Image (cartoon, rainbow, N blue to C red; front, side, top):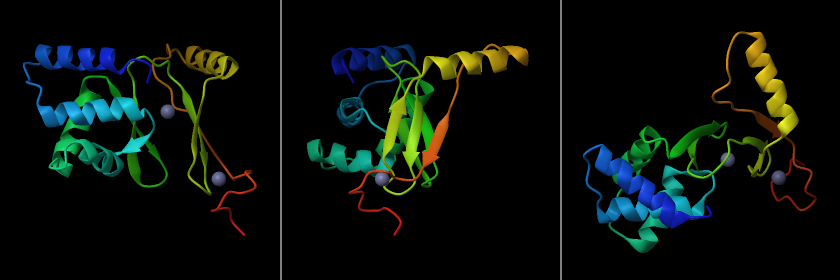
Amino acid sequence: MKDVKEAMEAFHQRLRDAGLKSTRQRDVIVETFFKIDKHISVDELLVEARKQSPRIGYATVYRTMKLLVEQGLANPRRFDDGQTRYDPEFDKEQHDHLICVDCRRIIEFDDDEVLARLNKIAADHGLKLRRRSVEIYGECQVTDCPHKAN
Ligand SMILES: [Zn+2]
Ligand SMILES: [Zn+2]
């Protein structure tokens, strides 16, 4: 994420608007989440946040992510590995994902032609596109992928 400081300010502002207080643990979790800026799960975020603040518990991370989703600062995604992963939604355009079914690599893409097509499909069905989620699952073509089938 480009501007973690700005994202933290937006977070604090939204907490105030909701009449909630920021806590040190919550701040560590949110800041870590914005800094890492990739499709992280609650389990992974817990490991990272504990490097800063070892007493953070799973439930706190879970509730904090739920709060960020409610505030529109995080977008939950489920790619088919059974985990919910979160994308920061602060300064990014919406984007889509490619997922390697072998090594679970997640790549982001944003393609104007795809978007134009989706807008057209939505319009043809009487909808104005608001959110979208395009996921492409593929076999790994990276030669040294350690998880490649055979
Ligand atoms: Zn993403
Ligand atoms: Zn791979």
